[in-house]
Amino acid sequence: MEPSDLVDGYKFGDQTTSDVRVCFKRADDQAEWFCCHSSVLSGNSKYFADWLSRNDIGSNNCIEVDCISADYEHYVKVLKLIYLPAESIIDSFESVRSAVGVLRASTLLKCELITRSCIEYLEAASWDEKEEEEILEVAQSLGSEEAVALLARLQAPNVSAVKNVFISAIRFATSMESPSPPFLDDLKTSAQEQIDFMLHEDDDTALVTMDEDVRSVVREGLKKLFSTLKIGLDLLTSEYEQLPEQAEQRVLCSLADIDWMANVLTKIEMMNEFVSGWSEISGYVLSVVQDKKYSSGLWLVKAKLIEVTGKAFDAVGYGSVVFPASSRVHFLRMWLPFMQTTKRLLDEKLKDDAIPQMDADLFQNIEGAIVSLVLALPSGDQADILGEWMKNAEQFRYPDLTEAFEVWCYRSKTAKRRLVGGLNGSGNPTVSL
Image 1 (cartoon, rainbow, N blue to C red):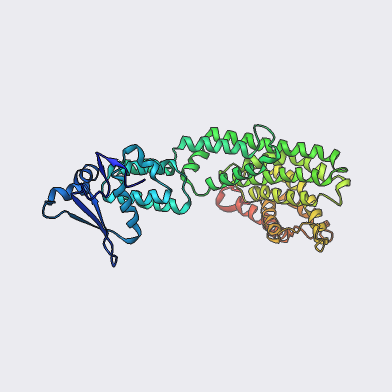
Image 2: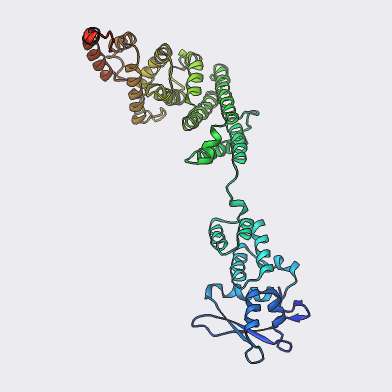
C-alpha cells in the first residue's frame, strides 16, 4: 500500500488539496500530523464524520485522536486504508497480527468497510494460540453479527455435528473400515486421544454417547478389536519362531487398543459390553498364551493381559457390571491361576531388565476387586475358592484373600443364628442371611 494510491481523486498526505489534518496523540511522544481530506474521512469513518459535523474546519481543521503507543501504527494504517479502493484493502494485510491491530483501530474509528475487510481476512487465515486470544479480545468490541462471523471456527458445534465426528473417530480409532497401514498408526493414536478429550466432562458429548447409533458403533468397534486380537493370536503360533518380536508386538498393539476401549466404555457406562466380550474370548486367549512354547516369553503380552483383565475384575467386583454368580465364578476361575503364576514369575525376575515390571498399585487394585468379587458370591462358591486358595497359599502369595476368608468365617459362624432368629422372631418367618 502506497500513499500515492487514489480514492475519489484524492491522494493521502497531499498538502496541496488537503483541508484537514489528523494526529494520533501518544503520551510523551511528539505529535505527527497527516494531511487528509474531510470528504474522504467523513465518507469512510463515522468517527470522523461525527467530528466534522460538530466542528468548523474553517477555524479548526486539526483532528486529534487519543491513541496508545502500541496501537499507533495500526491507527496510521487505518488512515491510509481509507484512501484505498475497497477491493485493495484485504491485499494490504501482511499478517494476522497486523489485521487484528487494524481491526481494533478501525472499530474505534467506526470504519465499517475496513472492519469488514479485516474480519474477512481473519476468518480465512490460520491463527496461532496467542493470535486467537487477541482475536477473542477484540471480538468483544464488535457487534454480534460481526463477532459471529469472525469467531465462526470457535463456535460450539451442534449435537448432530458432534455425533458425526465422534462416530467417525470411533471407526478410525478401532480400524473398523479396514486394517490400518503402518503410516496411519499415528493418526489412529490421535483419534483415540481426541475421543478421550471429547469425553472429558463435556455435556454435549455426554448426550451424544447416550445416542443408540453411537453406542451401536462403539459395540461394533469393540467387536472389531476383539477380532483383531484373535487374528493376532492365530498368527502368533506360526510367526513366533521366526519373528518373535513382530508377532508379540502385533498382539500387544491389539491389547493396547482394547485397554483404551475399556477406558472409553467406563466413561460412557458400557463396561458390560467389554466384560461380556472379554469373558467370551478369555478361554481362547489363555489357551494360546499359556502354551508351553511361551513359558519363558511373551512377558509384555502377559503383563498387558493382567492389566486389561484387571479392568474387568474392577467392573464386576465393585458392581458396576452385574453378572450372574455362575458367570462371576467362571471368570474368576479362568483368570486366577494365570494371574497367580504370572505374578510369581514376574516377582522372581525383578532384576531382569528384559522383563516388564508392573506397578504394585495395579496389583493391589486388582486384589481388592477380587476380594470384593469373592465376598459377593454365594457362600458355597466362596468356600470352594477360598479352599483352593489356601491349598496353594505356599506356592502363590497373590492374591491375598485373607480378608475374604475372615469375612466368610464370620458369616458362616453367625449364619445359623441369624436364620433361627429370623424364623422365631414375632411369628414372621423372614430369613435374614
